[in-house]
Length: 387
Image 1: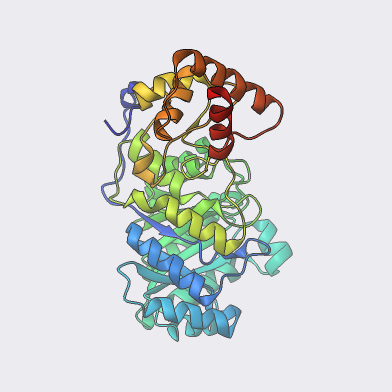
Image 2 (image 1 turned 180 degrees about the vertical axis):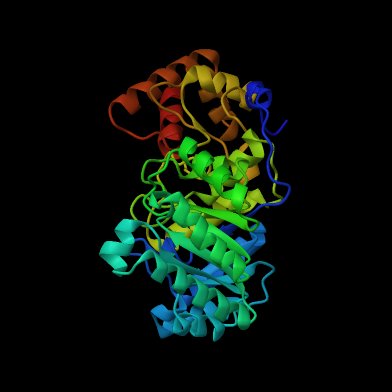
């Protein structure tokens, strides 16, 4: 058995769309994390690893930003990956031309739609925003691109206006429209309502781009799909501006293990991908980060270790190998005889029962004195006990 979760999950009647996809924006929105700047080689390596994971679409960058950015996006687009390669653009022909020069499969073109964005950032009217959407979608479709239109700050936008601008995108031939929860300001109940209201009036696929300002990006994404959305935006390690975006690894595993929705991703590469992005971004993964944190499969408490040795699923919802992790039994203040015996066996050391009890006592004492019990320290404790 590879996982064991609550049977109550199946008591709720839920229905996912038959086909929905994940598009990853680590290389674009993830790189917009203050202080992060991927090299071309790093971007290419991350794109290859995302493709190995079997991600559906990769948002490779924002070509208009710089010549170096265009080089990176074009290199990824011509790498021969299975994933579709998208680029971000504003609703400006020059942005779309820059994306076209990069040989991408499609674009995500965006404009702010909330009154606060229209009034204080763009200084335009709602009708102006609709006109920008129309011009951009028409231009991109005329040039043969896959087009996703994104309403920036959609979750703080009047719903009637959202319907108007999404309908215009649909009328112009857009392939998808995006709900951008730009400031992570909506609840799961709110996103459920918003998506259900929009799908009543639209005949175009909806996708979600959720930020994590209140720690709700993953559940908002799942809730939105259950309400009828057909796409989810993610980043590796939840990278992104402010509190980041919906975490790719958390989303994939929640869908697979908790909801029984396996999208066919090669999850054994998740830890490797996470480490790659952490190194490239120079942002270490939190120790206790779900799925990929180094502490996720480490056990110290004697009661827990006793059970884990016999049946790991007593204290793990799924086995570490599913995500490319390894289980670790850690020695410390809370360790018991069984954990120490397991460590002795691992080190191929043999002791008597009395010596075992003394080693356990010394392990606890050493840790309480501030010493970390690594293999070297443990072997020294064993050696001192056997004298």
